[in-house]
Image (tube, helix red, strand yellow):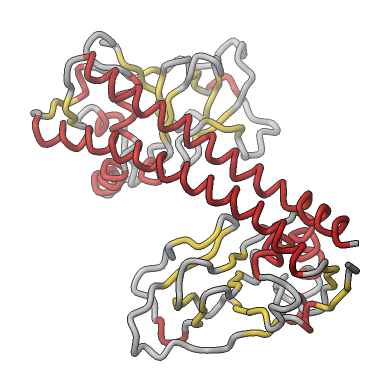
Amino acid sequence: MALKKYKLGELIAQRREKYNGKEILQSWGVSRDGFIRPKQRDADTSIYNVFYRNDFVFNPARMELNSIALNTSFDKAICSSLYEVFYITREDVVLPEYLNMFIKRDEFARRCWYEAIGSARNYFRIGDLSLFYITLPPIDVQRKYVDVYLAMQNNLAAYQSKVEELKLVCDGYIEDLRRRMKCEKIGTYISECNTRNENLLVSKVQGVESSGNFAETRANTNGIDFHNYKIVKPNQFAYNPSRINLGSIALRNEIDGKCIISPMYIVFEVINSEKLMSDYLLLWLSRSEFLRSTLFYASGSVRDTFGFDDMVNVAIPIPDISVQREIVNIHKCYLERQRIAEELKSQINRLCPVLIKGSLETGD
């Protein structure tokens, strides 16, 4: 069994089919993790590209991020005209799933970035990909290692489906409370915090990302006077009043300790923990429905911000503390399983170079 070296241009071809609008087809975008729903609404799909099962779809402006996906789910679908589509013309030489393993390596993404930086817009196109060389083992060896890869992906998909079921349980519990219970304003349960870093005792400067997490600040802090920065203690909330609609609100945990944030942020805490759990409140303040409502209330202010005066008027159902604790525990279980799912996904991606190497050693 000998290895053979090919130029990818000998094995693939670009698909150039445009959507004619006669069929109702789903539109998809692409990220590193696969196909995603497009963010743009009501787009003109008349110029969209059509792709089929076992086609590869990629974003030529994001290939350094490995924004490419093999379609194994849809018989026929469409994607933005900015994307490029190709398919394998020699499946007797290379399996689509094997080529996908080859592509899903960090080494491949780095090579794409290197080739793209020489173009006018740092684009990596099919013409560039066609110049790549790939060393291939026989089909039966490819299939053996593809089966290992697909088995891991199927296990991940099964695990992720269970994670999503747990999220549905949590969301359903919360929605049931909203329907059954009278909502109360949270103003009587919370208090704004305005402790400043006057003695410069806290040096960890952070901000709040749209993911709802504290993170190291990306702002240039050279020459900044931190005396006026606000201190955030464990079990306190912090949010960006001009970006809360994007999810920029977080609860400080005990492990991370104190940090300081920009004076523009708002910090508050729950003052009646016997009636309202901070984690339970965070669940409500992280819901997409709440985040969208902040945009409505903020648009009436001078600077389009959702201030603490708006926050105290937020109304939520506040059940017995034991019920709150039960919901919080379910949600924490969901978050932990979600973290495990993400780690499994990373492990599968890291395994791609190992599988490719193993297949080449077996086929040599």
